[in-house]
Amino acid sequence: MASNGSDLQDLQDVRPVGRTPLRATADNALKIVVVGGFGVGKTTLVGSVSEIRPLNTEEVMTRAGEGIDPAGSWGKRSTTVAFDFGRITLSERQVLYLFGAPGQERFWFLWDRLFSGALGAVVLVDTRRLEDSWYAIDRLEHHGTPFVVARNNFGEPGHTLEQVREALDLPPEVPLVDCDARDRESGKQVLIELVHHLAALAGADAAALAGPGAPDAIYEESTP
Image 1 (cartoon, rainbow, N blue to C red):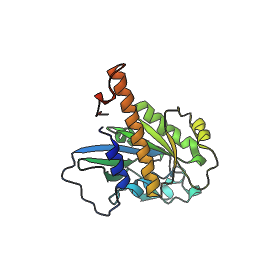
Image 2: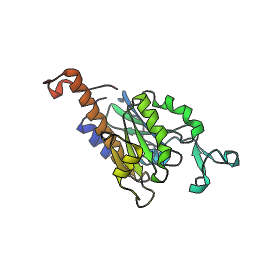
Image 3: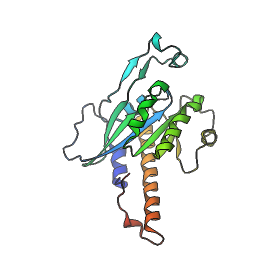
Image 4: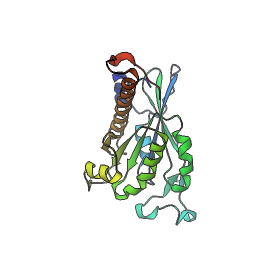
């Protein structure tokens, strides 16, 4: 991954357009996965930050899913059955692809495929159902995929971020931030936080490989 200040600025400055063509010069694709429990806002987050009309695989929930998908109590009437897909152009050559994973347990078998080749991940959590996030965190740790956790606020937060960190047993080095998946600016800040986290990890790995006293600029680029 080549990460620098200009990439962050590009992410901050990107404007949503209904039909933005992929640049012919784009030759470096970066992949980020958005995961979390059922109904936490993954589809909403991908749609709010994507520069193109997002591809989604939403299907109407029917009686066949009663007792399988926990829908009624949250007023949810549709669900992702494969994945969501969005795109953000970072620069002339770099493009960020966003994949939103399905939240229902019966579709978890797709997650390992979605994690393949991912640079990092965003774990969306709903504090009303924190336990739904444990599987996502466990699978990312199993794959060694770096991630940040974003608390999607469905109203006034009832707990502090430190209480959420303790409940999820997150180590201090894993960023935990607030967001509103419906708001594009808020969603962008989550992605920027992930980019910062990945850059910090890349710097730490480079320093470890280079040994004590090596100049910081010895590794200007790193690959996942």
